[in-house]
Length: 176
Ligand SMILES: [Zn+2]
Image (tube, rainbow, N blue to C red; front, side, top):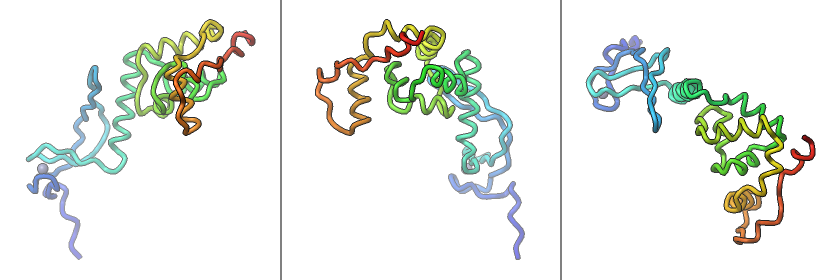
């Protein structure tokens, strides 16, 4: 039986050149406001076309690493801290999203480490974590956000103006 073709002469599936070789070069991960070189991964790279071929799941891992570095760089709450503050405040992911006015699944993604939160969201979360009584001073999450949330939860259309019946998290004020 034929031996496996040595890695150095494998054919690139992108450009067809026999130019693939093992690489451990840092991988550049770009965000809207900056980029990071992530080290420590082995993959194949084509010296002809420049394409990098990563094993299954490796790009997600590299991306997660970059998100963690970006978080640390910006001094943002970690996924664990976000889970902890949510548990301390007794909020579901959907409820926290509603208070922050961020899109569906944002908090899920922050907690999974696939994306990081904005500085504004981070500051808000730190504020309500340190001062849960702030909830008592917040009349409502914006109605459009609540409409989205209700629509998501009920799978039914929500009529504008029909959502201002007080669903307010006053229990934090009472508990404080
Ligand atoms: Zn190539």
